[in-house]
Each structure stands twice: as C-alpha cells, then as structure tokens.
Image (cartoon, rainbow, N blue to C red; front, side, top):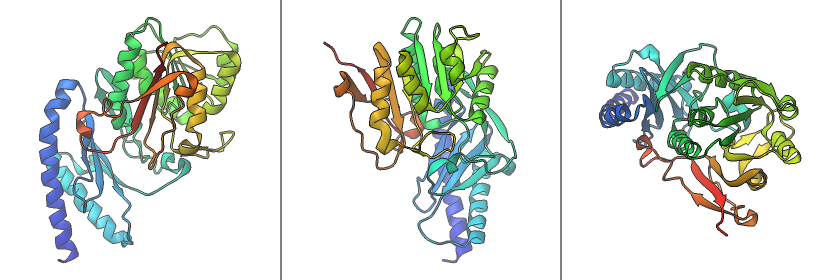
Length: 342
C-alpha cells in the first residue's frame, strides 16, 4: 500500500475511534463536571498518538517511533491525523496541537518549545485550571492524576484544620483541591518560578489568595497573610530543613519528577534511586494519624516499601485513583502511607 493511501486509511481509523470515544465519555464528563479528559491513548498500535480534549481545543503527542522516519513524511502524517481529529470533534484545526514526544531525561520535558501562549481554562469538579496547549510538552494539568486529586480533597475535608504539604507541586493542582476542602492550610513547594507563577494564577481564578515566599522566609516567619503558601525551594533541601525545624503536616503529597538534573537543585534526582530516602523523610515529618500520598509514572519502577521500617503501612491505590477516561490505560502508580494500628 502506498504511503498516502496508508496514511488516509489510518486517518479514517482515528476519526472513527475519536467519534466513538467522545460519544462514550461526554456524558460521564458532563455528570462529573469535567471538560478536559483523555480521548485516545495509542488505542490502535499503528497510530501511536495520545490525544486529550481541553474544553473546545485538543492537545496531544505523537510518541517517537522506534524506527527512522523521514521528518517531512512524519509531518505530513501528523497533519493528516490532526485533520481527522478536527473532523471527528468539530474543532477548528488551529485549536489542535499535536507534538512529537521523544524519549527524554532530565528537565527537557519541561522546557518551553515555543512562545505562542495558547491558553485554555478548563473545569474539573468545581475548580478551574489554566492550561497552555501550545508552548510545552505538558499542559500544566496532568489529567491522569485527577482521581487522586479528588481522593486527597476528600481526605483533607475529613480532617479538622488539616495542614497539607505538596512537594514538587508544579502548577499546584493537588494544592487547589486540598485548599477548597475547608479549614486547611496548604504549603506548596517547587523550585521553578515559572510554575509557581502559574500556580498563583490557578489560585486566583478560583478566587483564592495565595502568598509566595522563599524557603528562608517560610521557616523564619510565624505570621503569613494566607493559609495557602507557594514556596520557592528545592524540595529535597526543604525537607531537610523541615526535619531540622521539626515542622510537621497531616497530609503530604509526593509526586516527584522521574528524573531531574536542574542546576537550581543541590544534586540530581532519580525517583528509582532516591524514593526510599524521600519517603522515609516525609514519614518523619508526618503528624500522628496523617497520610502520605506517593505517586510516580516512572517506567520499570521498583517500589521499595519504607513504611514498615517507619511503623507505617503502605497501600497501593493505583486502581482507586484511575478515572473513567483511563480505563485500560497505563496510569501513574500510587500508594498511601498511614500509621500501622498498635
């Protein structure tokens, strides 16, 4: 089969699949107050795309193929898939962003690709999040963590006056879910000014005041303007300082990058190598009766249970954290740590 005929056949296959998936998911999305969700995730092996709907726009990626392919030929193929998605979802082609996602290590996946600033505000279970569909590989909101965010909000709501710590907070989606649980304090830590500024926007469009401060000021000041704080810090250094200062929290959210070699950090980070030490440190600053939520999307991850050594029981909640649009798809592995009964 000629290349153009093969591409046309695949475009029609994608069109049909997207129509079917959208019809299946739109009622669930309306019922749950969600308008950003996963539509397609390499469902057809010869079409290795990931496609997400963000309200009235689409963002997705072509996963790098394991064989050499002419760049111009790949671009034509991607254009054909983009046109198929536009037809299937009745969305103008200029509101569809499909990028190529290559195997990467370090902070390259967070690097800015362009400066187009195509923003879409999306709804998620009563909250609004600002996403950027054009400029980065990731949009600012990880859809596969949605159900986990809800579980954490429910946990925070059941605790009177809970103190929540969100490490490696990115754009603070977990933090916002916790913040609206009521009568809580939320501390969100990230080393990136870009993401902390983005997090501040997310709080603002939800009508919440948030305070931004450096690590030194957070630990030295007892008076803050808001119960919601964005802290610019290397999360590893922040944890060490929290241990020294004997600061504790009721809920800790630990969703670190797979790998980071940012020059802003004291040392590089690898979740496979470092998660045991990281979890143990978090458990040491967890209040009695508290909960640590740990999540990772690392490939070939081997979980080393540090709970029992610290008198905690860990429970795999990956399936509980799986939402409807990720049925049958690969999702991040998730665990919750709580104190073992006496």
